[in-house]
Structures are given as structure tokens and as C-alpha cells.
Length: 404
Image 1: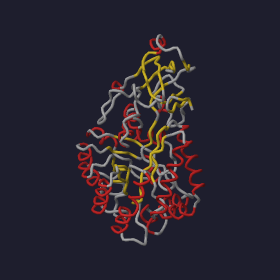
Image 2: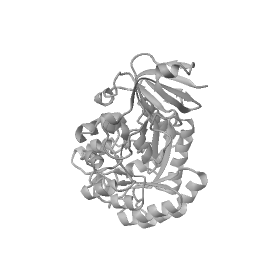
Image 3: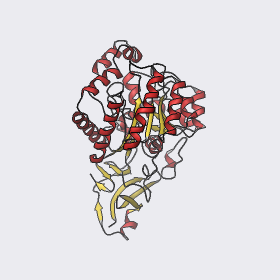
Image 4: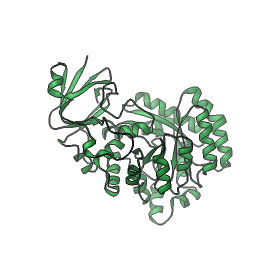
């Protein structure tokens, strides 16, 4: 039976906004005193509450001033890991670089060791707790990468755990295979990638563990040439593609565009030519302000990317090393301040543009036929969401039309 939910002071549908380029306040469809009708986990109708009330008698009333909008989407996380990396934080603040820590066996390698030693039960318990924290902050879809196993057996174990938790989690977990995070010490880089293609891809496909493949493109991780070959082979094996690109050097953007990846993530160190290349492509640019804050680096040039005509998404990069905060709205609001992004641009980057970066077209907007994933904030005006820099939390969260 259809259920009318409301009335809301404002309903931000995120409809009618282009996938690429700048977004202004006037581009937003804002329905004042609006309502949302849900049925069987989908959105049935969105409009003025009083008008909808004439048709629908089953009502779930919302008391007080509320702003409703689509559920948030975090399109880049490393949410399954073991241990902690507080020592890395201290080392960086004492003058060591990310790359120096990595070459001395710290960084990712430290987390790899702790993850391999952790039980599956513990990894799954931690993943549930992290996903629940995200849900409470309004994130209803969470991409989760592997990458802290770095052997076929360990990486497959992580994918199985993500899929197991996803079946029980209240948010949708989207698994991404990042076996090519860094190269294990016992391999040559090209040999390791060949191993992943020949030995691990078939298991992933046979068990339907993931539909997405990622790679970290940097000289210290995987240089552009062999990364491009790997992405091509991943595509031939039926995977969607994404990549870490442009974090410490401009390397990777060309690889992403040439291989038609869904997104290129990080981009803190890119230049004008890279920005133009992305703007002319269908590859989304994903900014990760949490990593900039964690590493003390420049932010992704989000303003330039938007003005050039790119599709910008914003994600947390939640991980134990460079981005331990894992707060999507706080990170996005800080990026907005430094990059001069409008609230409309940021909210687009956290909803339907983030969905596009994941290749998902059934969420991120409040439109008939979309998944009924939406949230409300205890405020009469959507501008307060980013203004409060993460301190204004959602008061209600609906997943598949059900109040959580």
C-alpha cells in the first residue's frame, strides 16, 4: 500500500540538474511543504503534501521543520581493515612523507599485516560498526574496497566478508576489488598484476563477489603503463573500472580517461591539461577531502573541475591511514569552504553524481521509480546542512521506504 511521508519544510529532489558542470541554488528543485510517497521500496510520487494527501490516505507524519533529500552516497571507502595507524599520523606530523613511511614497511603494509592476522569475524564486526556509523550520518550507499590483503586468498576473504555483511547491513555495500593497492614485496609489479588477472579475477567472477576493479596509479604503487594494461584486462573480464589517480603526481588521469573508468579518484596533484581531459570524458572526478586533511595536502581542485565541465563527486576515502575521520558531510563542507563550492554543488556531489561514479542510476534523486532511500534533517532550510559542518545530523533515515 502506498504511504505518504511528510510534510517536510523543503524537499530537495535533485531532479533536473545536469550530470556535469557547476550547480547554483536556482538549479535546485525545492518543494516547500512537500511530501514523498513510497511503495514496495520505491518512490511513487513527490509533490506538495496537501495535494498528495487528497490521493493517499496512509500517512506517516513528520513533526517539526524538516528538510528531505536523497540518501547520501559515499563512493570511495576502504572500510574493511584490521588494526590502527596512529603511529603513521605521528610520523607524518614529525616530518616523514607518506611515501617514506610506505617504503619503510609502514603505511598500507602495516595495515596489510594487521588485516591478514585479524579473524573474519572481527573484520566483519568492525565493518558493521563502521557502516552503522555511516548510516546514522545519512549515508545509505557505501562503496567498500579491498586492498589490505594483497594475496589472492586474503583479498577473496575480504570480498566474501563484504558480501556477507552487505546482506545483513542496513546500507547498501558496493564491493570493489583493489588487489592492486600496492605491490607485495615478493613480486615484481607486472608479475603481481598478471597473477591477479589469471588467478583472482576468475574466482571473483565465479562467486560474483564484485563487479568493480580499482588500481592505485603512482610510481610507488603501479606506474601508468602497467596500470593501463591491467585495467584493459579487467574490462575484458567484465568488470567496471575505477582508479586512484593524481594523488601525489599527475600520473593516472590519462590512464583513467583512455580506459573509460567510471571515475578517477583523488586528483589533488593534477594540472590544467588533466582537468580538461576529464571534462571532455565521461569519467567522473572524485574528490577525497578526508585524505587532504589527513595528509596535510592540497585539496582536489574541485572549483576548476566543475568550471571546466567535469562531473564531481565527493567521498570520504575512509581508511586507517590517510583518512581516518570518515565523516562525509564534515569533509565535504570543509572542501566547499576552501574550493568555494555552492551547497547545490556539494549536495549533487554527495547524491546523484556520486551514484553516477559508481555506475548506479536507481538512486541519488527523489523521482518516481527510484529507490526510496532518503533522509531528513531537523532544519527548515537545506543551507544549514553544510553550514553546520557535520554537526547537524539526520533526524530520520528511510531505506527502501522504511524508517530505520
